[in-house]
Length: 166
Image (cartoon, rainbow, N blue to C red):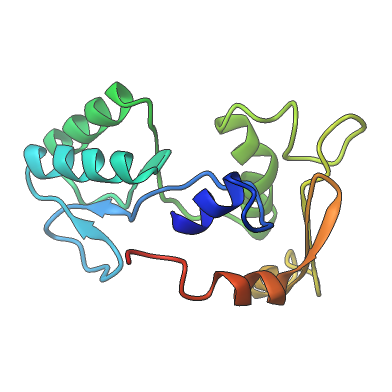
């Protein structure tokens, strides 16, 4: 969140950020990276916290009850946050979801999400073919924001220590 603030305020170069809090999941979750919310009030509290921290999205893994999910969605919508979940996709579908579909969900498809005349030049260049080898999506060489290219390693180094709860 602090890196997003620094980029938004022009103190450091970086990409456009739309931030989701950690995955919310039910008490039965086995995922150590998720935040367990076993009651509707715990779900509301988690949504309030991440909204106040600057998150624009809330995401779910799927082990939560309908009551918990309903409470979190109601709280998220009351605060203007969007809600999403997790599912499995082919590499081609995943790339489209991360780009054009992601832009559609965010209401940004007229500006970003695909390469077309008149759209912002927000891109990332990867080494390899992520359709054949999905892990190569992480081998980012250059990130472009508004047509200006940034070295991805330099961006990661600049973000070191600025990401997460401090």
